[in-house]
Image: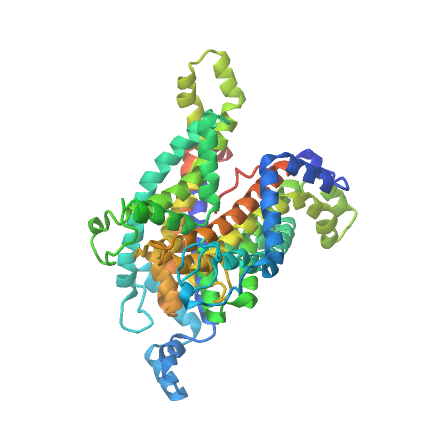
Length: 320
Length: 294
């Protein structure tokens, strides 16, 4: 068990290392560097470029810079942005906080709702509640986020006037100032994530309810709801852990489109802006942060599944 | 992911029964009809569109639906009906080429490394994991911003990044059958790796790859339209639903028809592909609901 845990954690570490290598070499391989970008508008001559590269320390071998970058990243210092003045950690810090706020709100609305809907439609398979929930889930999963977001703005904000349709709060503002502007993006995100988790929970509830031990319990006369809560759900909800983890990772790193639609000052919009401005140091840092979050969340989910599932737990123990 | 025992022995001419099975399901009938209509529309729309898609008319700017312009006009006075009819062409062209290519290269690499196994496989999987841990939009945008938008960049970019998750799926499916007797028999007969992949593994992994391909198609379409929406997809004045929604969004409060028309176009196509993929998965006996969503 312990061996397994350590192995998983080490593998996660290896993945993050490979990610940083991919990010760094990817950026190195792209044509142009910070200086050609920075001086591009002035039709920079070779002399200026050389001076700039010297200033920004770009002449050293890539491997040295990679070592320095990773060392800095581990200690929380992400270096300077492409302008050579601003510290990346201050730019990214506020945005990361805002993204976490958005993700947290969406999770606290979406996950309980998804579990509830999944269990309901699993237990009442092919009946009215299941048909309604499953149809809605197909829509939520297939329609692009920007489409559902745009439609919700149209209905809830423009036609009904219930909620503000766009976020105007600045990136550095305290979290409390994002209410109520944050509500509409939260609704869209929880709608999308809810669909994925719900479908997973539904199919796993159906599987478990059809299994032998549940039939056995029914035959022995265990009351229905006791059977559902004590015998079926603990097993049925286990596979949901991994989907929830993937959704959390997606919320923390991939909600670029939603942030653009609602003008929300999170990590995703910073990512788009930095890519458009070719502010590659910032892009590298965001990529590293997001990838690390992804690896950590998935690792946590794997470990949680292992700990929560008696079968897996004892299997590894017996192996030892 | 379990393969039914029937698929181990591939019988010839399975296409007709599988098609029949798909069409016997309501989701398959609706899905395939939508997809077929959209492909037909993409082929015919240049000749049936009532107006030139790039013809601007300042007198018509943001005008509501009328008898001449059934769906009104956009912010440059272009006919929305014509643009909506043609708005799926670019998306279907790009994803229609990139999806099969992605499934092919990802499938081949996945089967190969599933067969080879060992240390090489272990390293490759870590690289695949690393790629998957980066948000798709970041990977693509970096390439697109560097090399320009256009089809010539979008197709290779989508092909490359959407092939990577396929590696995983193909490898897992290969692992499921690699220890079967017929693979051992082929190895014992001294067949080359290529021959084992082509004649023993591929026929048995094909079902999984086809379902995977259908799902990848809808995800790629989502990605493509999101890129267009963000302004990194097709370049104006080419009509594209994502771009049209993004353009019309600013005028949504007094000209909502500009948003609603492309929304319907895009949604029906993606829902059609998804329903078809669902029906295909069920017809081939592969449980799609068990898959991770992203």
